[in-house]
Length: 89
Image 1 (cartoon, rainbow, N blue to C red):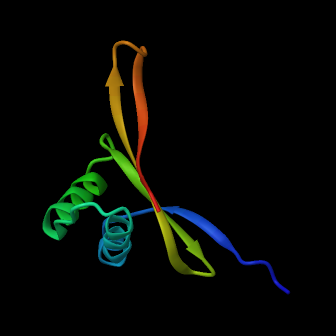
Image 2 (image 1 turned 90 degrees about the vertical axis):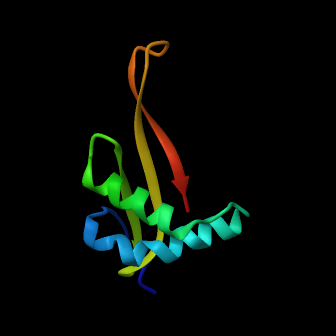
């Protein structure tokens, strides 16, 4: 038996269309409102500006199986920049 190969990779703009169905699945599973146009725009904006954060894709045997979205913020209380895990699916 060969172990499954799992790889996290940083998403690029070309990954958006492949990612959108997983975003929709996450919103449905969590019973969150899902405005596909707004979600797509937010992901495109995030991928276009690394100062906002990033998206990472989990591939298992080359197939997209999950994702992580992290955004960057700034807090005076905590002394500077921080990372917020916005979505993990």
